[in-house]
Image (tube, rainbow, N blue to C red; front, top):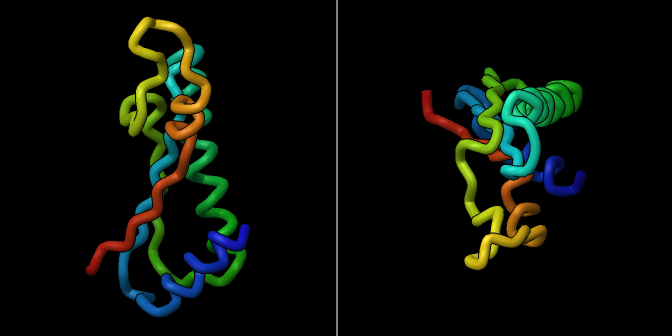
Length: 97
């Protein structure tokens, strides 16, 4: 949570900026399940930020496994758990209104 506490400090410095939260998953498993999981991830972070007094308007959205930042598999086709972990994330962005 220390990372999110830093986010709160930044967001309070820019209270009129729109915050977007994107939830992401790795490519393993059912697409529908991953979509819902990514939505829950984004909503969880939104709930936490609001509970900690963030004044910004916040939009949360799940992307499932559609925007990976690392391959889910190694070049030989085998599972790559290290890179898959990188895809399980939440991205927070502030946008000037």
